[in-house]
Amino acid sequence: MLCFKTISSPIGSLTLTEEDGVLRRLDFGRVSGLAQAVPGDSPLLALAESQLREYFAGGRREFSIPFALSGTPFQQKVWAELAKIPYGTVCTYGDLARAIGKPQAFRAVGGANHRNPISIIVPCHRVIGQDHSLTGYGGGLQTKEFLLKLEGVTL
Image (cartoon, rainbow, N blue to C red; front, top):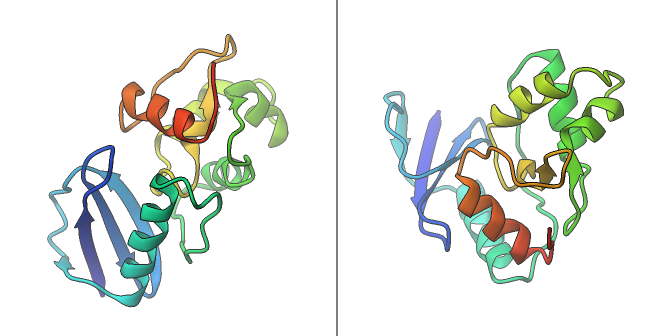
């Protein structure tokens, strides 16, 4: 069963979607198009909400929420590398491309980063441009800047 819950946060509404006991999505805003999903709560969604609140309060640096990411093998590699970026640090799209053994694929890495279905928990906000500038983010650049500042990153 697909279940979702929308919560408030310092960056606006976040919609959490669970399926089969794992988090499948974390979306910015209220998400429409969840026709097969039912609004509700579950132990997993409550845990995700609690850990996100702790993160936004500055008390959590890592998440321990079971999740599953659906994507191509290339996307899976990129997302696995994203998950390794430590709290309070950043890397570039080129760094990620090199880490997955595809040094010329930095644009494709950017595309996979953009399609990350579980933002914040899989920290795509920690990826910046080669010139250390803030570049695209699904939640908007203000949100990316907020999250990086929350983690103590200054650019």
